[in-house]
Length: 144
Image (cartoon, rainbow, N blue to C red; front, side, top):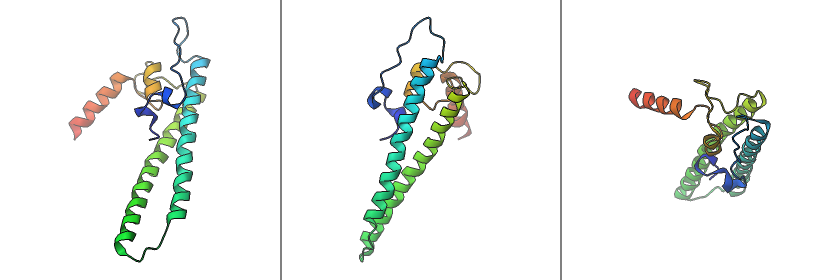
């Protein structure tokens, strides 16, 4: 639901960045564009965390029937697992914001090449260019 990587930025109210041939990569305008995307995504995730806390507090019922209790515990467990994944995603978003602050955002951590505006719009937390990511996935597959 809150995974921006599986949806484009436009779905969250952001138009794709208008590229121009004479604009330098990761210009102040591009940095502002990605900062806005990352902050909106983080805000959305934090709202989900708040909703989960309120939902669990409001719906925590001590059911007398063991099956009902087990169902509730299973639902809560799934919800907590989802929030844990989102917590990790918030950490990646914060790391992206820190890279923006240091002007390292948008460059591959492995080879230093530009990741690309459209790739970053699809996956704002990307830290590898497509070539390095492909090699990383091949290595991971080989290791099992």
